[in-house]
Length: 143
Image 1 (tube, rainbow, N blue to C red):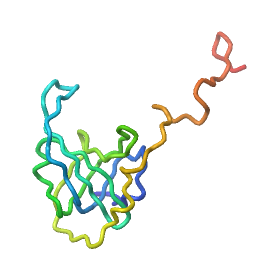
Image 2 (cartoon, one colour):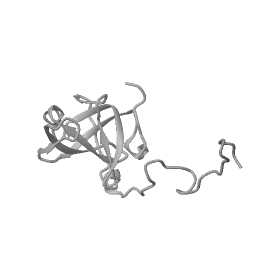
Image 3 (cartoon, rainbow, N blue to C red):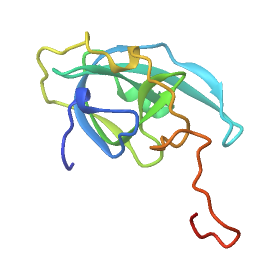
């Protein structure tokens, strides 16, 4: 595992996230339909925390059974996604979660990144306001 990150350092565009955290809560699994493969899958949301903060971790199918409240998990190659205005950590196709024997003492659940609303900046968080485009002639040269 490369650089281990702290939860407080995560942002809406974090990719390749590697961290170790304690599972402080987990919802009961529910069944949801997938828009990608038209199948039903189990879904659960776990809240994980380290000494710097907490964030929601989305768990699907077999990963749900791996994780228990109170256990320490190593999350590898995850990414942050904003869902309904809140940040959550996702494993995706290339990420993984595994339970490790590492002991984590005090955790900070007060700094829960998933409880903060993330401002909507559009799909592309461009540096110029939406609707402003560079003027070009019919050949693409900038005016």
